[in-house]
Length: 411
Image (cartoon, rainbow, N blue to C red):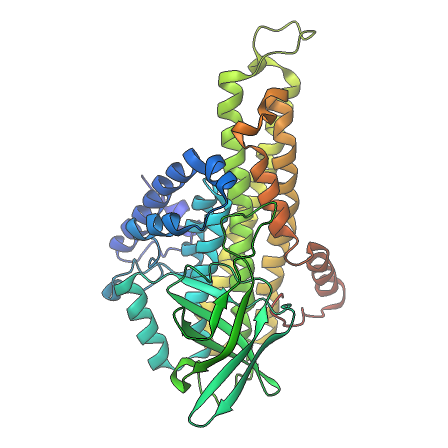
């Protein structure tokens, strides 16, 4: 794979940097493409089976994709966050569920760098690189009872439940948010901790391989060292720390548009091999049908536009991360809006493409065995994670009134 200087700039690579970094990024993209091709070949069958994605995580680990964002000296590829989410997009071309998992995983790996001490962040990065850990998340703030951390002598106890927790039962480590008094704290816990119980109740129409069911913590011990930062001085949420939410939102943007790209390629392949011209068209080939060509051109332009916005959003977040602790509230708002714009467009474009691609393939493409419906089911399931209408409102409020998006775990 050859990457031009334009490609390097698009993906956040300094073209004056050591060319070894360029090679590492190109090699990571190549490995992601190999994994995506393998996932795509069995995606429909695995979607129907609805099994835990243990083998799929092993495949990511085998191809050294779990640690790409960690420093080279720790065993990673030294990619920045925007680059790592390009891997998410590539994986989504083969399987949206697995892209969901690895996109969240990359976001989880960065949380210690926002909220932990330098020593905690370095130790966790070193383990990620050396042990190729896979991270699951217990962070959805809309769980039924929430999670509450309380002091218990020299340690702490965690109690409560969350309705959704992606990858939690198959992960090596968990990234967890919990209430501690009036504050929100971030925890890192092993999945073999006594008192942690995945519910195994994920059976939704899409994202079926994300292991996103509920979890319960029943008096689970949490050591002080497992609380990021000082447990008795919870985060104040500086503008830099509030970039935690854009991390997740950028993952969503990339696996939405990556899914659209993959679905589009699958539809083209199927149309070339199987589609027939309509009987009144007077044409010998479906490939000459002007309506099919118009639909392909329209969807291609929309998907390409969404991808460029996703690239722009990645660049915006990476620039903000590079500023570090001195990030201003206005810079944070600009970053969040760039990602909101990409989130709004990629949501609309990907859902439209996943539905309309049947128009170029024809009725036979709806046969269950092909599993082409999984693209729309996956997208529809995740795009209601947080209503995209609120992203449009945030954009409008910023543009018209200069009111920044309020920080939550959704914005």
